[in-house]
Amino acid sequence: MIGSDVVIEHVGKSFGAFRALDDVSIGIGKGEFFSLLGPSGCGKTTLLRIIAGFEQPESGAVLLDGVNVLPEPPNTRRVNTVFQNYALFPHLSVFENVAFSLRLAKAPDATVRDRVGHYLRLVELEAHADKKPAQLSGGQKQRVAIARALINEPSVLLLDEPLSALDAKLRQHMLIELDAIHDKIGITFIYVTHDQQEALSVSDRIAVMNGGQVLQVGTPQEIYEAPATDFVAKFIGETNLYEGTIRSVSGQMAELDTAEFGTVYVTDDDPPPAGTRVSWTVRPEKIRIDLERPSSVRGGLNLLSGLVDEPIYSGFQTKFYVRTDQGATLKVIKQHADWSDEGPRIRWKDSVWLSYSAEDAFLVEVKR
Image 1 (cartoon, rainbow, N blue to C red):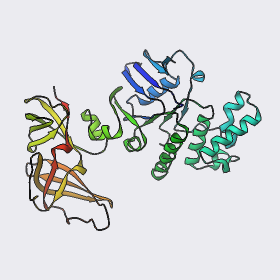
Image 2: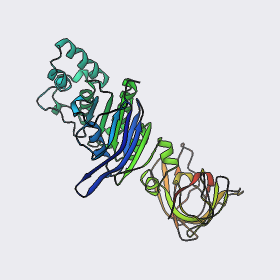
Image 3: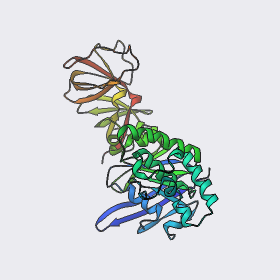
């Protein structure tokens, strides 16, 4: 890999009384596509700006390949940034926008032509080299900004909400292109976003942040399937999140007493002992919905009955809000896998059965 390791060690930053970053530590490997994910104000952009050199922390260190770069100014770090507003020069052509830093360095014309041509081909804009930014679409402007950031061949590319100004369809298209560019050049990408779907789609690993802290670092699958906190469970995708008390433990399976559903079976790598108050979660797509009671109920299968409060059809799926006999509401998502998969015609106010395995329900937090 030609990228750099990036290690953030115990970084803290305040703006007056506001604590933007609180003892943040993260390790990012060479060539990773790593995302900082969280809501507005969680500290992700502040952390990106500290890595770039635009902000200085009060404590901690930022190491690139083992060297603390905090004493270095932004222009000497092997890091470049792509901003969400593109920051292109409106009076310069696409070619000259990308060539700008080479012109400042007084690179020979032949070098400028070769390097700019290479990166315009990389972002598929060589046919637009003579256009001004005003003649480009939003996606094309973003690709110019990416090419300009890559022209100095940084070992780390920082991307601060780079797709937020684009419409939904173009954002998805650009996300695929961005991932392809990363695969071609192999440097380390650190991507800031508040959009969990973006982060899940392209990241090798994700750091979920809130309130200036890193709550969990993991692969997209780890973050989604085994959230470490209630916040992560609710922020990443849709879920059903409740509390309960552990009645008994058998291996990785825990039996819970819950106010909403009675007895519930969930799993955990290392369940806490009986009597512990916990939160637990099950994703809506893990729950099966049927008009008839399942013919066999094996151990560890959670089985509930209730009425459909609201069915919401979305083409590729239907989301059901089901009021159980105990009075609680569960969200259930049924995917429509192919043209014949209509499934039972479940409608508003139908009586239904819900079932899900203990292996699809997880303990999240121990409650103090």
